[in-house]
View 1 (spheres, rainbow, N blue to C red):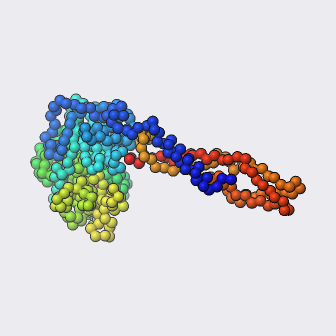
View 2 (cartoon, one colour):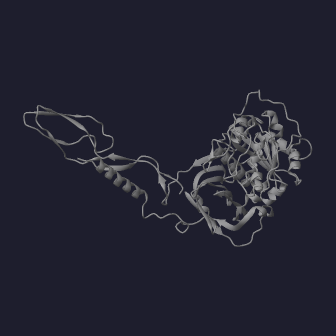
View 3 (cartoon, rainbow, N blue to C red):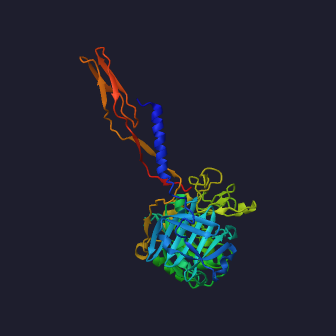
Length: 511
């Protein structure tokens, strides 16, 4: 007879065998020397780069790209000699022709990410690990520069400008042509920007991709869609406030073609990128939710701040009704809860929050790729304060509630003017030893039929009734009725051998 202790012993042996199958002693932990190659190859010759970025670079180096590794499931990111991470490819978005965006997660950091816009031999991307930003930008002839970025080097954006131009009549009562799933965006840029960037179109695409990832991180339903981008004839003023006024005005001889393009490509919002300026960005703030605000659906962003610091999404956030954190302003956005959020204890802040409260305390807070939302956690902490509490911070809710209004600033014509990206989601199979979580079941290899030998006195009868149903253990219970008074004995002639079968997908925990 097999007792409970024996069963537990068998289960323990099975568990050990199961774990031994996962942790094969022939598989080594991944490191740089075990991998066939790394993404970046050292380039030692001197290359000219934009001086505008120097104030935010902690360190940098020139590299060439091992393009073959983009076909691998895992990519070794050898950023600097003392900084290497492994990225797992998550998905690919095909943009047009040979241009696509590669999205990846970082094994060493649950909240780390990689976004690379691949445009032929030019790579424009950002890598964030443990709150530190690394940028990859093309320079020339296949040479790229990798930079570690210090967020404290970025100036804050300017508080939203007071409306100088008339707001049009509200058309909210009219049937909405767009359901709010997409906000159509047009980006225009100056000649200074075009000269400073080796691939401005990919930088713009990266800003769009980063913004959409921030929406996905934060529970924001809509996505932005780039419908058009072009260089505009305009001399930067050095004042973002002046640039915003010049962008917004119509028939004033300053960027008037932008308004024509906006109508042609049905852009709900327009973003102007400049190379110089006194801040990272500025925009008009929608405080009354109305389609009449479309006349103020404009923002200006400094190129160096547009990606990585998320100023591109930040400024459009103002157009959608989102405001800064409570420490710097108590003025409402579209709603009382339309504020950014700061966690001074953990030293991070959401997309719409300033660094002021932190710098006043003598430290820096990293801007993370999240919008304030009390229902979304970052490293175990809520990223906002719920409506109804003191100083509520719910910009994710703000954007969700204003999406259909903003999407109807223009009736979309993107289907006829903009190629739709196609998505390829990738299945990852780990090739190195990791820590796994999962469930398994122990199932007997025998069926419910048992072989039993019955010994009784010749003239008497024994009947047997099973009183339980097997539950994947090796113990069965029988009731024997003996007629009339003879003794029956039972001998089991087989012993079920439990085996282990996998019953769920084994998922890496990135440790």
